[in-house]
Length: 113
Length: 110
Image 1 (cartoon, chains in turn red, green):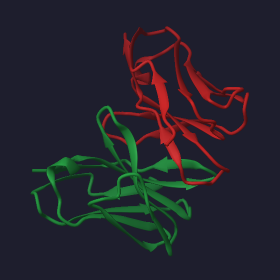
Image 2 (cartoon, rainbow over the protein chains, first blue to last red; image 1 turned 90 degrees about the vertical axis):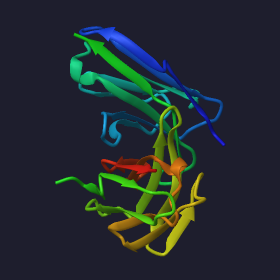
Image 3 (cartoon, each protein chain N blue to C red; image 1 turned 120 degrees about the horizontal axis):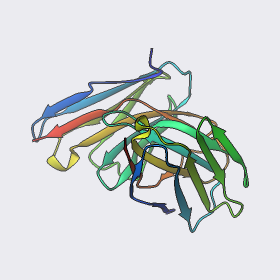
Image 4 (tube, rainbow over the protein chains, first blue to last red; image 1 turned 135 degrees about the horizontal axis):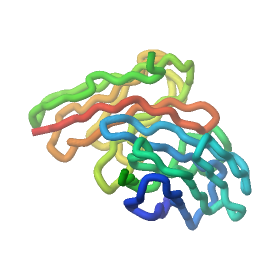
């Protein structure tokens, strides 16, 4: 089946710094999703990308759907302490609405005040 | 109010016990899912349902069963719990491929 390589696995950054993480795959995906998970909670959707090349922002977050459809990145600008958590990418094969989401293993973000 | 709710939030049980985890949603979505999350392994799909009469096995269905009692309710059962089923369990619903997760159930099997 499809596999997603998410990097880095963990990051320690100073408050105010920008953050970048990415996911790559050997397979083509039709949808890329980015989630954030806080300790003890379920993943919360941050950004959904549906078209190759699409660049979407949500506040200080920006994500892009790679042109090759095999990768995506998430940037966080001017990090703050509440950005701490685990960020997951997820890719979907097939038409929108099909069930199969493949998840990356997550990037654990720590922000040093 | 949360759109996707799960009960219980935490459960400790013993090997061999039958356990049911419940999920309810108010989003009106037809599609519902059960995942488990283990450290370092990410989220893995156990079962999914496209509607009340359509239930399908996911990547790791062995040892689990599900019931879709209504559009809004999807329950996961462990018929005879074993220690390696200790994990975080998440229910999700979806529309247009975007999945929305519940808060999770932390299950410990002793």
